[in-house]
Structures are given as structure tokens and as C-alpha cells.
Image 1 (cartoon, rainbow, N blue to C red):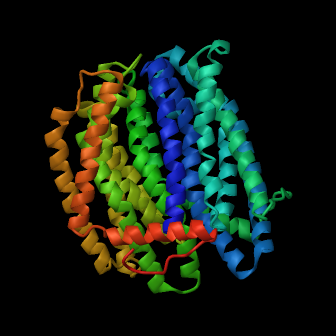
Image 2 (cartoon, rainbow, N blue to C red):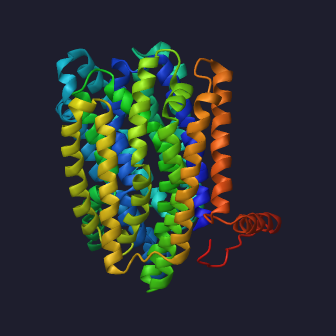
Image 3 (cartoon, helix red, strand yellow):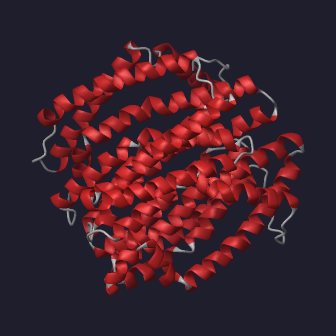
Length: 529
């Protein structure tokens, strides 16, 4: 599992870094103005489906079924199942895309009701959304193919394909600007073109893996009905975070102009640890947990869940505190240039700190949800998820006037904390999550080390970070501040027992040995890694 986490996390990190480069260019070109608001809303709907299908409901339903068929009936049955799923999804999503193109103005009234008071912004958002909407069908089909590769425990191609989204978006933003009405149009075309590229690369990868998919006539076979039944409720259960973030956009459109963009930039920063850690752990864990549950290996499944939580929290806890304390320097260094003024920096930093409060919950829910999905239970997460969405709505309405741009972010964080707490309690009562001694010991060490890091960052922030500086000087002082925080956490975590350097040394030794022999070496199972 750790190898899969490192593979998915490494490629996700590369994608997120390129995503920051893209967002830095967007911030410099259009800041938080009406074009930015319109583009981010146009991106939200297909991006919501990407995250739901690519990181949530579809994989939660598809991978356990595919992995089970692969183990019990062989590669041919698994490939036929995947091919039929591809055909059904292509037909359903294609029809949805056509309807979306036709009724985009009506969808925009739902997604961004506040834009209706500005006809020019509303019309621009509709135009850009019609350009980006085909990305929905392309990326959801790419998610299916990624699910096949993940079920085969081939994580590289599926993780690396998301890099193409940012590369193509940056290229279109730079080269297409002279030929389209606005930067928003160039970015929108980049979104759709990247969907074609990602699907094409993944189709080649799955063919290379010996699992080339056919595209038969769509049929609702018993297997497809079961898949859709499990996937339907999972759209809410696995995608609660994304549904809550979409609700934030709806509320933000009713707030002062620029709020949609302010929340977008803040969310993009907190998506780095969320994607690198949460998505990586959840993606790598689900196939393994599904096989263990199918084989009746209850003790092994408990150990897998404990280690996944441990891996997730080790970096998430310090990341959350670092984002809260250093929110302003982070936003200033990443986006504080060009059209992105200091007013936008301050507001985005405040929203980022509010999102960071819920970061551990955002990540751990990606670990706990697969514990239900691996057992074929999608109804429980959906019930908890509906409660979370309702809680988020109530909190958003309560916060939107007194807290303005901070309100949606804080509401989402508090709803996520409630969501993950409920899932953990239910798993504990069922005996499907029993925290073991190593988890308790290491979490205590992580919390203490994070507290020490917080003190160090707070003490050194104003002394080390040069807010008045520019360019390299400002970035250099920020890098030094981050370095101090990382060193303090790493040293304290080792001293307090959150991790053992000997474990890291053994992992590195195995990787060197694997490289020397040219073969994969599977680390022995242990409750201490």
C-alpha cells in the first residue's frame, strides 16, 4: 500500500505544482475580477464530476467489483465488465452533456444565482461553461479507465494523466489569448482539450496493461444495475466535500463580486495536501482493502485501515497548522502580483485559514469512506453525507452575512469534521475500525510535534518572512520559514515517537535493492510501518 501511496502522491504533487503555476498565471492576468469569477464557475461543474467520479463515487463502486471479478473469475470477465461499464457511462454522460449544453442558462441560475444581477457576467459564465462542459464526459470516462488501472494496481499512468490538465491549460492560456475574446475563453478551451488528451493516454496505458477495452452496445446487465445502484448513493457519500464546496460557490455568488475567485484561490492551496495525501491514501487503499474483505481477512483489513489513517495524519496535521499560521505569506508568495492586489491576498488568506481548520477531516474522510465501499455499503456514507450537506447549508446561511468570504470556508470545514466523526463512530461500533496501539502512540506524537511546530512558526513568522520584499527575496524568506517549520516538526515527531527513522531507512533500503535488482520487492506486513 505504501508504494501505491508514494506513486499516486508523487504524481499528484507534480500535478498540484503545475496547477499552482497555472493559477499564478491566472491570478496575474485576471485576478479576482468578473472574468475570473465566470471562469471558475464554468470550471466548477465539470470539475465537480471529475472529483466525484475520479476520486469518489465511481471508483468506490467500480474498483471493488472489478477487483473481485479479477480475483474470482479472471481477466476476461473483468475486462468485459469494464467494457460494458464504459459503454453505459459513455451513453449516459454523453446524453447529459448534450442536455447541459442546451440548458446551460438554466443550470447557471442554479450554480451561480448571484450572477443574474450582472447580465454581462452571467452571459460570459454561460459561454465559458458551454466550452468546458464536454470535459465532463471525457474525464469521467478517463476515471473509469483509471479505475481499471488502479484495480490492476498500476497507479502511475492514472496518476500522471492529471498532469496533462495543467500543462495544456497553461499552454492554451499563453498561446490562445490573442485569438479568443478573453483569457477565460483560452482557459476554457484548455480544459476540454486536456480531457481528450487524458482519455487518450489512459486508453493506451490500459491496452499496454493487457486489458484493452472494447466498446459494446450499452446494456443494463445485472452487473451494471448493481454498479449503478452502488454508485448512485456514493455520489453523495464519497463526494460530500465536493458537494459542500459547490454549495460554497452558490453562496459566494450571492456575496460581493470577487468572492467566488477568492474562495477558489484559497481552495486551490488546501487542495495540495488534500490531493497529495488524501487522494493518494484512499486510491492506494481501496483495492487492497477490497481484496482483504473479499477474502475474509478481517484482521488484515483493520491493520490496513489503521496504517492508512496513520499515513494520512502524519503530514496532514502539520499541513493544517502551517496553512492556518502562514496563510497570508502563502497567498502573497503564490498569487500576490499583477491583477491580484493586497486586498485579494488578505481575503484569500482568511478563507484559506478557515478551510485549513477542516483539512484533517477532508483527508481522513477519504480513508474512512473506502472502508464502507470495500464492503459494498454505500448507503451509510450517503446518509451521513446528506446530514453533512444539510449542516453545511445551515452554517453557510448563518455565516454569510457576519463572516462574508470566510463563512463558506468555515462552514465547509465544520461540516467535514462532523462528517468524518460520524463515519468513524459507525465503523467503530461495527468493529470495522479498531484503533491499535501503534496508531494511538503515533497520533499522540504527531499532535505534540504539531503543537511544537506551531509555536516555532508563530515565533519565527514575522522575524523571517519579508512581506515588503519582492520576487526572489520574498520567496526565499518564505522558503526559509517553511524549512524551519519542517525541521522542527520532523525532529519533534521522531523524538516523540510519531515515526521511527529506522522505518524510513528500511523503506529506502528496499527501494535501493529493488532498483538494483530491477524487480519489485514487497515489504513484509507489519503493524509498525
